[in-house]
Image 1 (cartoon, rainbow, N blue to C red):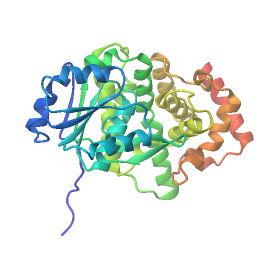
Image 2: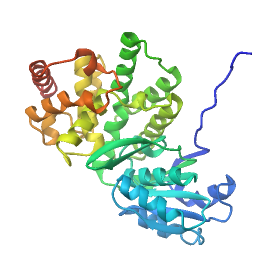
Image 3: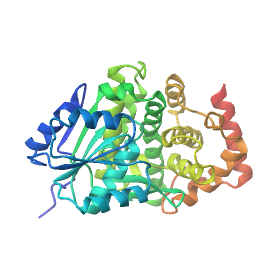
Image 4: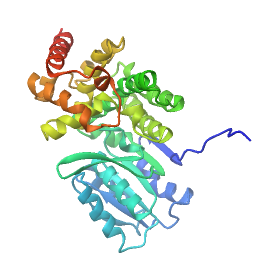
Amino acid sequence: MPLLARMVGLPLSVDVRRGAVESLAALLADRRISAEGRVAIAVGPGQGERVAASLRPMLERAELFRVEGGTVAAAEGLADELQHGWYDAVVGIGGGRTIDVAKYAASRSGLPMVTVATSLAHDGLASPVASLEHRGRKGSYGVHMPLAVIVDVEFALRCPVEQLRSGVGDALSNLTALADWELAGRERNEQIDGLAVALARTGAEALLRRTDGLDTEAFIVTLAEALILGGVAMAVAGSSRPCSGACHEIAHAIDALYPGTASHGEEVAVGSLFAAHLHGSPARAALDACLRRHGVPRTPQDLGLTEDEFVAAVAEAPATRPDRYTVLEHLAMDEPRIRREVAAFVEAVAA
């Protein structure tokens, strides 16, 4: 008998609106995640603590754990602490680093996890991937997908604008990541998942076409939904392929060569625009205009890198994901060719 459907683990609930965080206790009970609110709440510095404090009257049996830094060590430390208590689930409240630490610790502890995002810096809100630092290098770790995702628009509007710009860069980079995947399909006969492509492209293009600003509720909702759709696309594909191509290889290389240069999404934005240049993509102009409109970095200089440093990062980029075929692997550029392409790219986007 033919297989007529496939099973994909997806969040039970996605709630993106003002005041969404107030529904957390009801969600835990109604979805049978934790009827009594016996959960471990992982919070990071900043708005996460404020949200956790507001939830205390509704979740009296919850236990609070403060985490700092998006590292494997922090995630392992939280997982060890979870072994000493009895919890129905882990609730991660905060930005991307806190969410990734909570996802990793929950997966290692065999507990379901709920995301309560206070910022929109990258697509880890709903993804089955935790991006964590280990021994000075950032890596991607497979984790269980969150059972539920809450984005309270009110808190997202209060987060630093740099975090929103980072989220815009990460969401839009799906466009060139998909171009890289399609290239791998043509050149290497790599299997492409059409559903994952549709999900990742839909969120990115919805964002690309918005002309309102980062300070509007409608834009924040679209950004949150784009990032969530990216995470779901990764779950459907069974890998980060729909959202990670040459853009992420370049960002990982920048992190390795020049730690602390910029946020992940900002580095990915520049990497994506450069990848669009290498592809000769007709979408490059629209991508450039969108990044420019929202003040997202577009050139190496915007990241604080010289052209020489960016050339070195591009040369190093393929080594960060040896199993991934992108436009960088396809062109197999030597340093003089990279230098020419970077110069042409900078000249084009500066015009």
